[in-house]
Length: 331
Image (cartoon, rainbow, N blue to C red; front, side, top):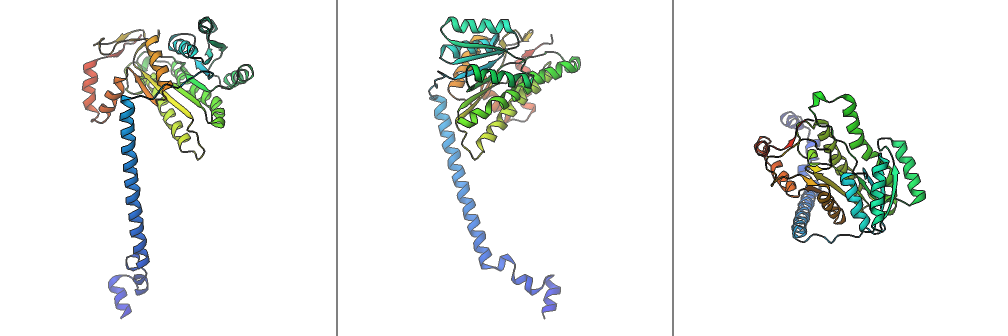
């Protein structure tokens, strides 16, 4: 009889008797696992709703700006533009500003401007694409000033021309300055931040790191990369079993800022998407850093417009982009 059952069912009685759907202990375990999964989903839903509520509250009632007094703040590209303006503002707030630029004359001007308002500032010349030069500079800063507690990766270049007109050297250089330099600087100054669980890393991305634009293909690639590396770094620190909650990160995504890099801007509605001054952009950057915002766009409205557009089929927001008809012409 057993052999007949085996032939009919394709399995022996011994195997059938041990199947999990006939085992009371196995059924109990599955019920337990189902209950635990349901509880985990409930806890997840509660956490997400609480976070949503907190985010909405902070939108209307932002966190108080933190003090940066006594922080040693290293700013690359401090010799002009947004780097200089950010340095001036942090200097007024009591930070010890470490101005880094490949141009010593402009860098010294920034330092002198900070000191003229009773601020503390130091100038260091460095090619931030040279990893060995960064390490040597870092050792000198440690000896002469102390450990850097805030890193502002501001230095950047922006070749503006069609991709096929962009040389290999230009493409390599824009990636070295805009992306690799940020990685070398983070690798240099992050270890001490991790040791003390204290620090802040600010990365200069762009709206060109959120939306692709013509005549800026390599540049867009670098700015998308900056957002990606900062997001990955955030997760690496967050998921580490050690506590690194004291290390903050802020990604800055300006639209068009009058720093001299944008030679031929094209804006259809100037009142809606105006070119910002370096001073206005710096005000927003410093405010975002002091409030520990993870990411901002300048102007802030573009952040929400982008988030909404990302939920649509790709072809739909392209109509809006064509209507706004803004960007940069080749130079």
